[in-house]
Length: 386
Image 1: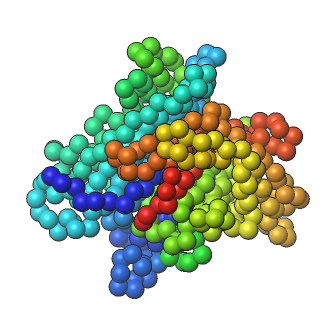
Image 2: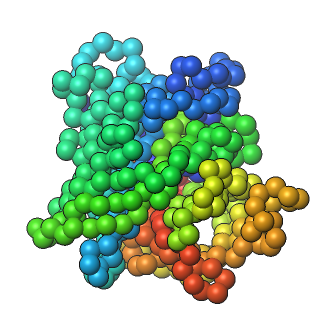
Image 3: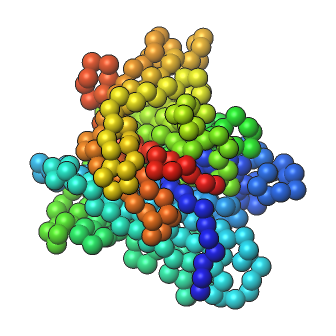
């Protein structure tokens, strides 16, 4: 079967460009007659239902990144599942109709070896679990593409994936409540009300399991971050890509920051959240509070793209008494620094996008480490087309 042509996207095309995200049928929507112009209306997210799939939306993803420690060796890992709805096949009754397409990316960053190992997969889903190679439960987090999987069982997730020279099976234990991004899970991605998505995170996941490199198994421990987002994926027309971080802070807090940028590199929209250690509620960062400034660049020999692999990140305090004293007192100056420069992923055989995503440190103004997590940058090879 020939799959219909899809626009290219990586995981953060939903984070940064996700626009009106019509969700589960219970969601209230202002319908203007075109499904791509529906305005997402805030509603309470329902768990565990919203941990599962939302097949009526255009695009959705579950995404796990983190650091792994094996004795003295440090690694990063990524596992991402994308679901893309195919509108033209929804009325077909054939069990072979590709009603959903699933893509999966996985990667391991070997810091000591200064290398990135990665792989990708694609499969179609008709909704018939007896024949589908990929599927996602609507009741809870249970998404699979052949033997790659991300499955929730109580307060734990199992993540499993493999590539030509690596494999991992990891247990991810929740240590904190869900972090609802934006306005209680409704996250704006642009100046228009329609440019939004539903989005939650699970930071500070405690990791244990096994990582195998070149046939050699290693027991690992570490920390991870999980994102789940679903949307109609409409990028503001002037945006060509985005820059994003999700950082587990060493004190137990969590920081998300992102910006969409235009072809000149100027910011179209920005946002994020900071949840202090011990707090259940995040401080929501507005577009004028998040400022990304590139400091150091690396050029890919494969794609020819030039990526900022070190950033200065300025977080401005909220006005008045909103937020916490730490943010309200003064601007927060941070540095985001990649642990290795070459963490570019070529997903030409699945989503079609080439993007940079990798393990990075977060430093304070004195140059001291205050967090570690993942940096993602898209739209540097060519503008994203949505």
